[in-house]
Image 1 (tube, rainbow, N blue to C red):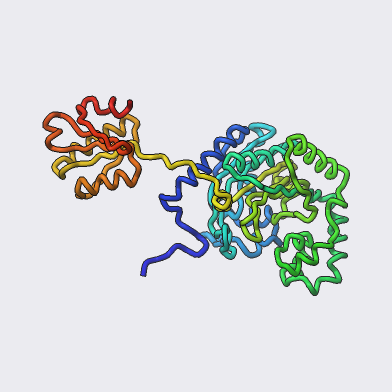
Image 2 (cartoon, rainbow, N blue to C red):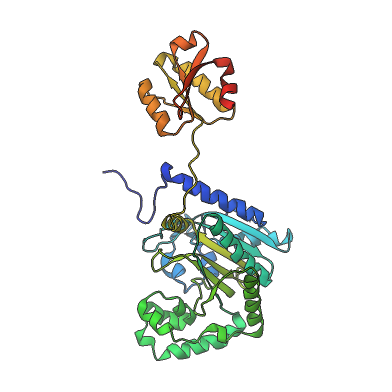
Length: 417
């Protein structure tokens, strides 16, 4: 019996890879336009980075991380998200010395040991952006606008933006007490995990996806009624920037996101048809994270989105994918005696900057022509003994089916016209 792909992972096969190229290229094109620079961090980090960064009571840390010891017994974790590694790299490489404000983006695989379901995998791919070094509400708005620009260019429509302010350390103190007071007489009706969250971090109860807890949360006090003046002003300015750009959004006062590092702005972008967890991206401000990880107090804001979920949303909305780039030239040989000449011509065509391929098996000319048709080659160069005796080959237009003899010395010029 052959070995299968691990649960929660998938192979991206050649017939689907063009979708990934298209999305990745579009993301990079737009982010470069906005002034973001790519950063690549390791696939695994020391576990403490995520425990301190994401929050020890979050679902990601308590249930979803792939963690293992190295040979010296140090705990390592496959990265479950991209922000904490970017912040670690920012601090370790003193990137704040280069510029007061740094704009970065990342693109690559993340890993979470959660139950696989539609659009959710244990290895999944994310792109994310981070603006580090500014507390300006305009940066929050830019992050949202950047995300929307990516979705718009990919053809996605009917997206809903949910936005909230989760406050700061100062205004959360009173709010946490209100939440604890509200939940005190309802603890027995909470799920087992939320009973534990109640004592460790009651705000995490607001992020529970179980129906029993969601019903209790519906009537809970909301953070936006407990914001300090600074957080209230910041939130108002973010909304003002979005309104100025004619962006429609909905305030969701119970939106807290699943990571403890968020402060002030938190938002999600959702698309219908993705099931109960219909977010295709989200983010927010994390003004305390850099200090929490050993740096000086530094404000920052970011966003991340899963590529797999974007592909599902694009397919569900029946957005037409760009036509896959066709092969320029296929080189076919009439007989195996012609294979060396065919190979030399193949390389000559490639060296001229054209995409070209040939069949290395001992198939008949008929089978080679079927391959040329299947891969969508524009032209086929047919190498035969009779034509070679005249220093010529046959050039066949695969669309019109017209063909003619061409001097080998003139072949490249003919193909380039």
